Image (cartoon, rainbow, N blue to C red; front, side, top):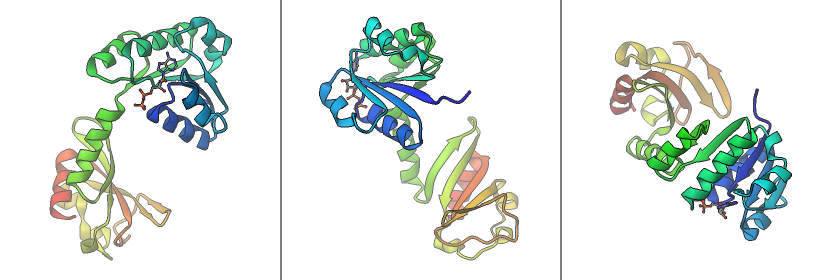
Length: 219
Ligand code: ADP
C-alpha cells in the first residue's frame, strides 16, 4: 500500500524540504520539531506542525503517530535522539520508518534497529554532484545494480537533428535510448526513425561501461 500520511520528525533543511515536497504532491504531513521557531515557519504550510520532543513516548502517543503510514526521522544534529526516535516509531507500530543517517555507523545502528530505509542525503548528493560535474550533459542517473544504470542526458549540439539510427547507440556502444523528452512531451520507446534535437532529454539504459563510453565519445 502506498503511504498517504507522513510524520516528519526534525524540520531542519532536509526535513522541511521533504515535508513541503510531500505537501505539494498532495499528501498529509504532520511535522514535529522541538524548536518553536522551526515549527512556526512551517505551521501554515503543513497539515499539522507541532512543537514536541519526539523522544517523549507519551507525547508521540497523544499525537496519534502510530496511525500514520510512514515516519521519517530527519534529526541530523543528535545521533542519540535520532536513534531513540526511530526505536519509538518502530515500537508504536508505524508501518514504514525511514531515517536520515549522519555517518556510516549511525546508519548501521539504524538498520540494526529495524528501520526500513536508511538514507544518507549528504553522501548521496555528493556522489550525484560528482557525476554531474564530470559529465556536463548528465542530468540524473539511477544505479540499477553495480553494473547497470539508467541516465538522463541533455542532447548536445553535435547530435542535433540526427535519427536514432544514425546515433546507433546499440550497435556502437551496447546501450539503448528508452525515452526522449522534448518540451514536456515524452516519446517512450522511440524507434530508429525518431530524431533528437539539441536540448531534448534522452534517457539511456545500459552497462556502466557502455554508457560511460557513449558519454565520452558521442556527447
Ligand atoms: P538539517 O541538516 O536537515 O538542517 P538539522 O540537524 O539542522 O538538520 O535539524 C534537525 C532538526 O531536528 C532540528 O530542527 C531540531 O530542532 C530537530 N530535533 C532534534 N531533536 C529532536 C527531538 N528529540 N524532537 C523533535 N525535534 C528534534
